[in-house]
Image (cartoon, rainbow, N blue to C red; front, side):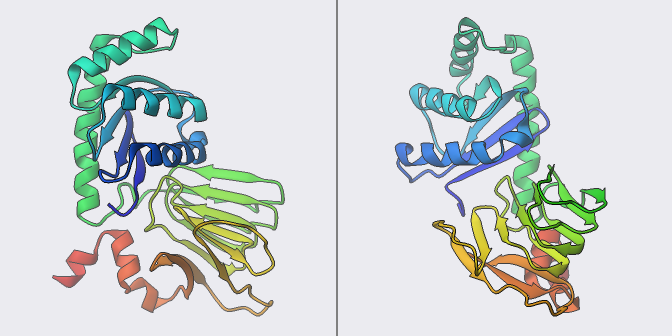
Length: 274
């Protein structure tokens, strides 16, 4: 898999996909990092958790739940790891610990819904399209310094993102103005997301786990790359995407709209090639 840890939010819970070859103790810090970054997206709801990609035993599943709840406000009411007995044990344990766990009947209904949604999610990803990629939230106005704005879907901002402002999106970000602050796209692990602006001059851009900063920033990251800041000239619309593991800047024009990167995001790559 492209990422050792990937999380996807669905209507009735969370799908956690884990690399099957990595040592479990190496995965835990990555799980903590993922859920900590996406904590605001999930809020404080009670949810079911589906663990995919590798087999986990009872002790490992318990450590995963502990890690999630320690780094978010979530309450995991049921865990689905293809082991009905394990689900029951978790539910009973959480009730004893005072957690707001769902009862057995509700947990079973929730897990059935989660399995159906996870199957739809997997099918959508295999077809090359991002689930909900045609859904976007629209914000009208300028985001000033100190402002933080978050959206679970892709985000369209009809205005400027000023220096010191920060926008975060589960999908892609489109700024119909100047992007001068920080932009975090693909916040839930989608490395196909991108950041577009009519005037792209951000301090920092993050797409999934990759980070790009302007030349005058002194940040440290395992996946850091540096992009050249604009010098005031108008270059026209530009887009930041992940290419070969690094964030690169391209012109947002007809060539990009016909490129493999955009078609893959839009889920139309196969249809265009037919």
